[in-house]
Length: 374
Image (cartoon, rainbow, N blue to C red):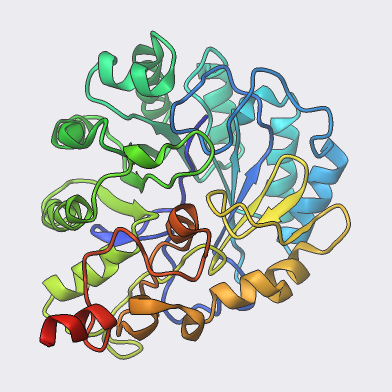
């Protein structure tokens, strides 16, 4: 199971990108479609709890075509990520990609590094106008990566797939899931990425969902230290760095730039996306969620319009309203650009509006800040 990549943003930025001026009430900037749950791997942190065989109730090719046409109705042309499971397990994947191209929908692909990744398929994807391809690398050694992926030989296959993709001229990103299992290995991975010819390194901060275990989530202090390390790395790395499911990085980046609060609109381009805010996820059976990491059902594209679900479903509307946030996130001056990871809040507390559990920052006016002052 691949974690989800997205479009490129500036070095040192976070989330799924998108300018602060974007109207996330009207449209997402990125839509993930879990085309299938089928995957040959058994990754320890798999969000989807992927399985070896395809589900019989997956969206059909025709339903996929209609979904793509619905995505084209959104203003601003959101990017569609074909993911899974392993999207290459669908025999109609290239038909779906061709329909996206014909419909004017920008698309990316996040497959599993398996035997299905061939030079022929990569070349065909490039010729179809694939905007970005991503592979996951969770360790700088076979021992670490393969233990993540649950398959001996996955590391070698990943490295071969990366080299092949770069060789055919695809725009490539590397995804890395951050957990206690590979935290100490991140500098080595960063150095490896430097020599790969990739354009983006996307770090996904683990959320306890699916197979992702709560005990594998790094501590709040480790989050903060890693955010600062990534900010420094972003100033010198030859590739862009992106932080996913680590929204507090935006606060750290602004503080490092000397801001006690977000600059006024137009003063800086700061990504502001979050679960349900500029982000949308569609499951293999058409279920719509705020993200693949926040498993609260908002509707189903088989019965409802995706545009209507995104714009009007109560959970999406709540997630886009920072005044609904509770605790220290509710009073934080950075909550419009950060807001904490809503999926992680839900994973730890069962309340998607609860404070981000892995953020150490105590904003002025919070209960903790008041106790410290007393």
